[in-house]
Image (tube, rainbow, N blue to C red; front, side, top):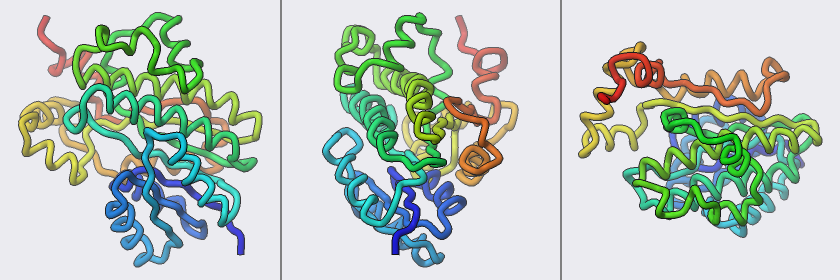
Length: 277
């Protein structure tokens, strides 16, 4: 029997929290670069009563994304997209961050947008990092939003000479995610569908715990200690906002980005986290 399908990319805590909140009664197809991660999340969700299938999927490959979409369509119309895939500044080199987080997200939004059903909805997980970078020019923002995906990595602002380090690459990728969601929301709207992005701050996940105990641990601990909330967030708190965006209560919200970071970005610009000049 055909049923509505949710695509979940990235088998992590945030993606699973959103899928558990929104995926009851749907077929959920999980794609991750590491199939064992997708299978682990699928088992947890199956044991909780969800209808889930795990697949290997490489976000940096259009062919791999299209294969995932084709598998999802075997079960029914794609009604929801939750994109929580990506790599962090401490996980990958500059080239990989741009290929996965920037290019891959652009391709995924484009390809799902071609087939999303009327009334469908998507969220992509961006990051507070996209809000930390100085403003780009209007021309640069438009390039990130509208350049054909296959030409994105050729943009001058993304060339090695203009990318300082992996954190800068990550910030550019997340800024691109936000702008891309704005541009894609216009195209999705032609099909009666909506798409938004969420920019979490420090959220406790197995990956974050590794970071807390790693070489950048003091940096992260200082960040949430000096933010207004005084603590890191949880995956379920991100899912709270995703639930609003993906439900009928969010029917007038599309092309928007929601910063959920306990006030860390506010503190970065106007409080104790502000970098010394």
